[in-house]
Length: 480
Image (cartoon, rainbow, N blue to C red; front, side, top):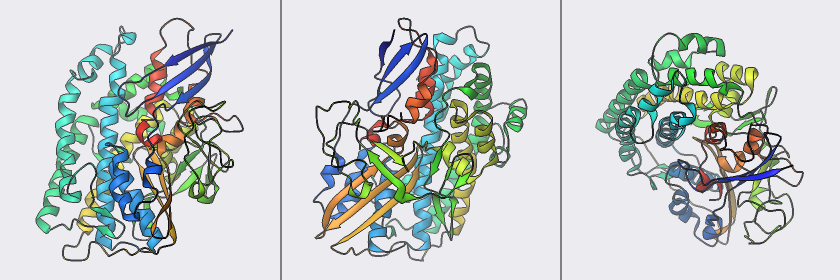
């Protein structure tokens, strides 16, 4: 006997999300993830001037707008065959990193941790303190984190002119050159944010957190002080979040933050070992999405987004991207596993890609990236070029691949007769929240939900929400 239950809409999620669960014998037998809001940005871009993408794609999302700008700028730069000067490259890193770090902080404090203040956990030794600290809107954490986040995000005014929807991020670099006094102000903002992280989030120096190399070291570190990460680790141990929400254990990263001759976090694929990433192996399956099929599967550069309201077997507006026909997971955990961080790889080796591992990886990136931002500021050279002119041919194409906070984001651009002929986007949550493909493979979240305890009639367990939120979904980016 199978009972179908629908979960949603979800609060504290950017955009619309609905999940159908088939429940048999007290467990989730199958999950079907639906992105129910169609948006159509890929059609909006067709026929526009290529530079118009820099105005339109940031409006896909109010949380990840710089990430969309950065991917569009890289696609246009690739189509033009140019690279920004060092100042422009560093400014792009700093602008994207500011948004990504703010997203990590927001997810932990405002989206994820409030679920542990639910009445489901009344009686747990940590529950009362968690309610006082993390309860949505009234806990002590929001009152601390919001001013700290606002102070950090003021960096965007100097780096990008405004946020969201900046136009400072360009194919040739940044149109917001910085003076020495402004660089000093950015250093001060980073010092203040470092102070918040070290005193409140970690209760330790960032470098000490970044140096944790294994689950055993993390468990030992947990007992040596305070900080909100340690509070989460105690909850994760009690609820066994280290074995909850495992998906494919196949991790992908496009690589993040271009430095001279290398990336801070390299591109690659990890599945029982490291492998090179073959971008040409990416395709989009639309067999279970409400789009007209023009041949399955489709390479992104040649893909189409033609909505249909009725289609047999379809249940989502999200496409199903695949790498060489395989489901992959993307995000902070994937980035750090691919990059070879010993803690990330040890977490995956011990329990796979779990709820706890995903959350720890996000906070680990705060400790890893903020020192890099401090270094990038010292490398800026006021008075040197920040941006070079861009001239696109009438017939060209380009690809822009970056790592947003939630994972791998790609833009595929084709220009014909000086206008955008085709523009296709695969966002991080498109990868993680994809529906089934023609071979019947569930997407990463669909796999992570299968097997969870669930009752056909009683309230569904909080664990389902923990698994969903551990991916930090951005549904408006998912369907653009």
